[in-house]
Image 1 (cartoon, rainbow, N blue to C red):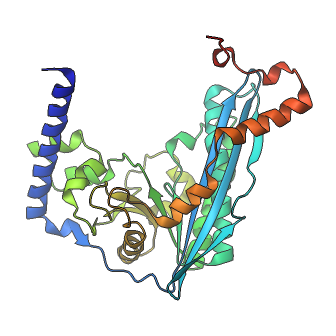
Image 2 (image 1 turned 90 degrees about the vertical axis):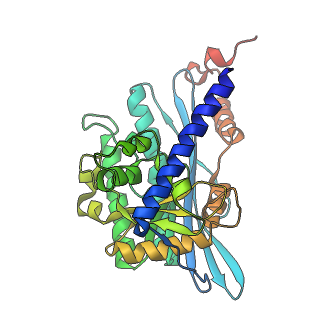
Image 3 (image 1 turned 120 degrees about the vertical axis):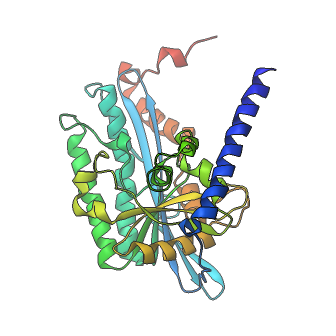
Length: 343
C-alpha cells in the first residue's frame, strides 16, 4: 500500500467515525442544533470591514503597508446600494520597523498595526452608517498572536488597541448595532470541547473529538441552513487577553452556521447581552448573505471588503522604490542576499 493510499484510508476512517458520532449525538440530543430563521434583507444595512497587510524584511528595516476598507450594503427597493469608507480604493499606509525590535516584538507589532486600522475603520463605519449588523473579518477579540508580554516593546500599542476595541463594543451596544466577526478558516475546538465536557464526559467515543476541530466535525452534524446552539467564547478564563477587555468578556459568544452544502460551517463570534436572541438574528442574516455559492460560504459584504482592502506585492514594491529614490544605495534597504541569489 503506497503512502497516498494509507493516508487516504486514515482520513476516510476518521471522517467515518465523526459522521457516526454526529448521528449518535443528534439522535440523543437533537436540541443542540436548530434551523436558521429565514431572513428578508429588505431595509437592512450590513457593514463589513476587512484589512490588507504586507511586510517585507530588508537588511536594516522591515517595511510594512496596511489598508482597511469598510463596506456598507443597504438592501433597498430590490437593489443593493454600496457605500465605502474611507473610500472604494484607498491608498495604503506605509511604515517601517527598525532592528531595535526583537523578532518576536516585531511580529506582534505587525499584527497589532493591522488590527488597529481595522478596528478604527469599524468604529467609523458604526458611527457613519449606523448599520443593523457590523461584521468584521475574523474574531471580535484579539488573536493570541497579537497579545504581547507586559515587558514587551509592543505592550503600549497593545493597550491602545484594547482601548479601541472596548470603544467599538460600547459604540455598538449603545447604538443597538449587532457586532459580529466571521472566522473564515477557523480551526478552533470550542464547540467540540463543549460536547466532550457536557455530553460525552467519561465516554470512550469522546476520543473522536480529540482529533477533530469544530468545523471538521460540524460538517457532519449540521445540515444546510442549520446552526449550533450559541456557546460562551470566553468560558475559559485563562485565555490570553480576556482580562484586558474587562466585563465585555462575559458578552462574547460564538455560533456555527452552515450556509452551503459543500463547504464547512462558518464560525461567527458576536457581542450580546441577550445571546439567544442575538444568535438567532445574526445567524439568520449571515446565512442569507453567505449561501450564494455551494462550495464557498462567506458573507458577501466581507467578500467585497476583502477585494477592496487586499494588497499585492506591487503595492509593497512601489513603497520600496519610493524609499530607494530618496535614499539611494543605503544598506538599510538592501534586499536580503537569500532573495538575490543569481542561481
